[in-house]
Image (cartoon, rainbow, N blue to C red; front, side, top):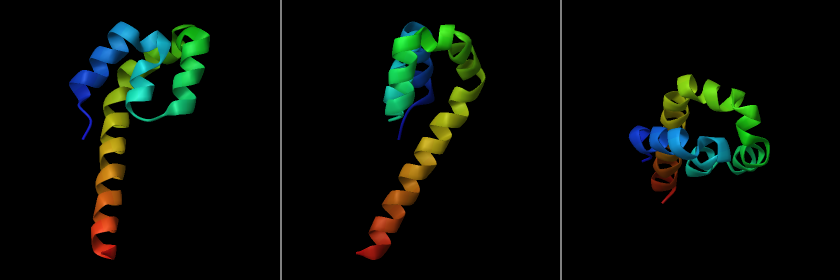
Amino acid sequence: MKSKLLAYLLWFFLGVFGVHKFYLHKWLWGVLYFFTGGFACIGWLIDLFTLGTQVDAYNLATFNKKLIENNIK
C-alpha cells in the first residue's frame, strides 16, 4: 500500500521532477514531468487536487491484483 502522506510530501518537494509519479509506478508520466518541469507546473498544481485519488486507485489495483493471484492458486 502506498501512503498518501508520502505521496504528497514527494509531490511538494520533488513534484516538478515527477518523483510522486514514479512512486505510484506511473513511469511515463514521471519521465514527462521530469523533462517538462511538471508541464510548467500546471500538471504539478493539478496533482494537488488529484493525488489522493491516484493513490487510492493504485492501492485498489494492487489489492485486486493480489486478490486475483490468491484465487488462482
